[in-house]
Amino acid sequence: MSEIDKMPRDYSYIGENIRAIREKIAEAQTSSPYKDDVTLLLATKYASAEEINAAAEYGVRDIGENRVQQLLEKYDALD
Image (tube, rainbow, N blue to C red):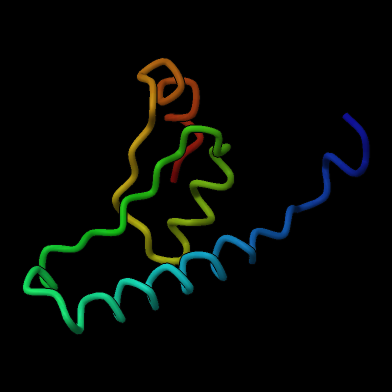
């Protein structure tokens, strides 16, 4: 493993994306009769366990994986 691989990754882009999505949800909820029925679901098809944990740090709690095998590979590394 190289020194670059050992360096901590910056996942701030995940927080920025989550914030932007939450803003769009809030805007849409102002005119929706279903405003209380909206849930932000993180689809993790290509996300690493580290990226999923970073999203959890930004408050995302509802997470869906595309395949059971991929979930099992990541499960032990999730916080």
